[in-house]
Image 1: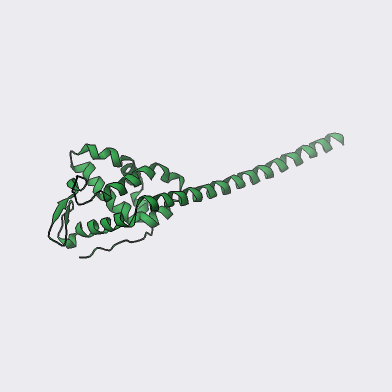
Image 2: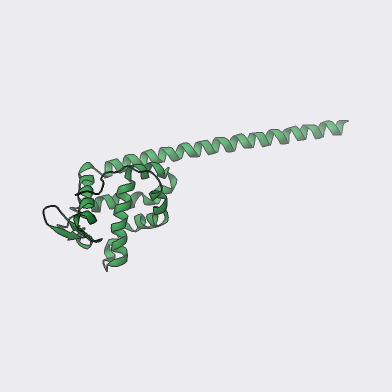
Amino acid sequence: MKILGTELIYWIIFIVSIVGTCFIIKIFMDFAKQRRLENTLRLLDFLRQGINNDQIATFIKLFNANSELAGASYNEFKFADGDSDTIETMFSEGGCGNGDIYNIIATLNAIAPMLGTTKEQIIWYEYGQIMDKIYSWTKYLEENTDQKDHVSFYSSFNLYMKKNVQKILSTTFKYYIYAEL
């Protein structure tokens, strides 16, 4: 009878250990979700500080100028005042990016390695259109030009986008601008 009682105590300890382990795993998973949300909110705050309204206005201007509706080819910007520019010269001094697009890309490139630790859908909702269009420009530079000096300032961003562009395009995001003239 004593052996049976000892065995029963061991079984109870075993069951309590399993239940305790399940609780610990559940608490850990909830903590990880909370951390991910906190990281997302911090990153979103960083983006809002790093990408200001003037830069977004420049993006909107270039988005419209790069539209086929404006008569522009894939690597060209045609502005309403008759001026034109190309993606290749966007980052040069006096280029149509006016330094704003460079700063947006530098900010996105800085956060790209951290996006895996966040709820990406929140970042994509806020900046998806900007990320997608800027990726099309940087991808063009990466694939079609000899300007390899530009690659260093957006390589992390392009690497992230290559892996995730399909996910971004399948989610809802905020539109800053629709194609218009």
